[in-house]
Image 1 (tube, rainbow over the protein chains, first blue to last red):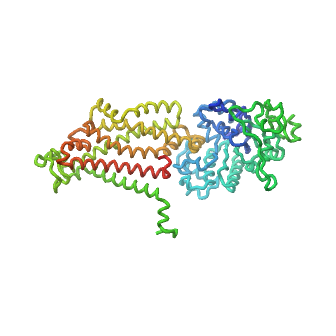
Image 2 (tube, chains in turn cyan, purple):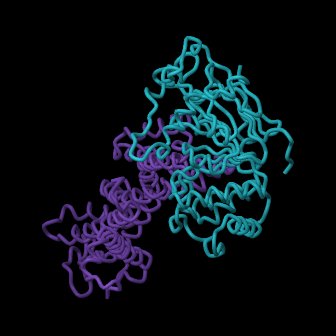
Length: 331
Length: 288
């Protein structure tokens, strides 16, 4: 696998909208984001903010009704304009995906081993025996005990954590440069969550796979992500290192999101909520989409703030960023 | 013996649906097995030549030699029923098999791709569906001439849209499953995804519908033969035998009872298999 020095995956002004009775719903609105080789980038936001749409767009797996503009660059190719048969060759080979619920993302009629081997045979011209040997090796690598015995088992005989390991093994079967993990731990027990996150982190370090980790759980972000991108109503509002996001959130939405995490206030204190509602994406607010719920909004906010910043401080899309030390750099 | 130490009654009460599914499936399979065996071994089992005419035994009552009596030509009713069962089962099974082989790919493609592909496949099938079944069969037979092959073909055409719709509906649900999207995310093409992941997970309801329809196909074949449009004399057929015995019902009721019971048993076996399959594949009765 050739690894370029540039970003492993780059989204360039990506827009996705779906037709609806109320007119087009813009699920992803002008997202530009770079995923660097070797890093785990967390993509955080509420349910319905466009995280999963963004993931499916990056895989070229959106339904045909979706309107896509902008670019998804993997190496020097733009996935948004590739033909289905070229996309098929890339999916599972150069870019792979782990889904949220392992109990539904494995086919019940095939054995778990078959599903790992299938991924290899979809891309490599190898014999069944060779594919099985490779699949067994992968199953051992993701920590499945007695892989030979479990190879022939149907998914329903495995626990959720084991199934998610299988899904990860299948995703990594052809050593992809990019792994998109769409809420990979949401459906699992907390103890299993930590194991799966460690597994992803270890695989990233050993194989140098860039991981886009989509989640709404800030605890998950804190554990493994190098950088974090915060999404609100289809737009990126802030991109910064994990440390900065937690210590100096610059966007009022990021700040509010951190305050809304249970367990950060006094015991017994009321949980903090963000006032107002997520905007209707068929008729989103003009300018900053968070402005109607933002305590710091001014008239300026009716113009969309650009996502600006630098490597050291991260980037924020806000006219009134919060942290003092970043106010200077963000103008 | 209960391993857990609980009374066996509790263990049984905890899983009645699965047991009932197995029971009806087993009874159906055993019954069908016997009928198929009888049909296959017809030349061995039949005590007489089914076509041998005996003027001395016209409408003879059941006795030691002619166990189930003789018909208006003095032919042995038991032997004729055994041979008729052969034709009837063959027509019923082959018509549904042919219909299924055509319907499954059509329903799969329509349900998987949806949109204009669905329209292109489903609308012509709906056009067959609006025609009354028997009228459709009669028209086809009028065009192609009577006979058991044409009857089988007509029945296949009648059941094609029904089976295709079942497959399409089932495919619509399966196509939305995460594992189908996951397979595509792993690089599986549309055809491979359909064949490997959607088809095996969608075929269950078609198997259920197919076995039930085979029972009805047997009835339909009997009806066509009764009207003289299906299997042609002198080949014995269950429907044809019913037609022959109609005029002498009060003199020789065995001419009606024997083929009638044979039809009922054959239909029952297919319905029991269908019911058992449905309960096995869908124990909670979600799809019913």
